[in-house]
Length: 295
Image (cartoon, rainbow, N blue to C red):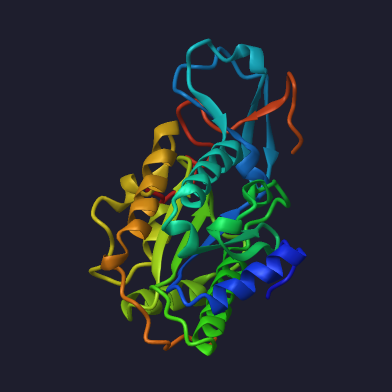
């Protein structure tokens, strides 16, 4: 499949098993923003005593703080760490579920300056969870390239299943970002909208942090199909938000009877700092709050 995927001999044998065991498959592609802004911190409002200085990084103004200046008892986390924690938890649940582990196949696509396949499709029974954890890359956010790569992954796996006379459920794209694109993803967003409209894709567009452009992410849905309370429900800020939305994804997969089974009609298609000068992207606020038009 696509480039830089996690390949072993076990990987190939498991992909073969996906095609020959005849189980209908629920395909999930996680498309994850790994730009440098994902290495920033969220700190509960009132949880920081002071900032040390200000600067400019990853295309926006940032403040810096000392870790010892976080007040005890106040929630705080790095966005990439919290995302990995919740992704690990979800994959572990899928892997240990006796039914779902043989019916769900997962792929991980990451994007910053470019997109790449971090983990190619395997059923959850064979999933190497730690190999799915994401790391920070470049200071750019190529959303269009990320979406194209993710859709190509889904298309290719669906075509393989179809050629093996296997059914599959409507595939799921979980798209995650914390900011705005550095490319122009309008064509890719239009492709996602069309697939959602035609029942060929289910999408979870997740905004990470206060600075996520929820108005843009809403554009992945056709008119009339935007989930109720989208901007609040699909924005992950507080620690519990991550767990809530990933439980929703898990339950969506579990309720397979609510997902249309395909007829085989596929679509062609910065290092951790021990002490000072840590980027502070939030003090209960976003470093993006000077940008207009975001909700």
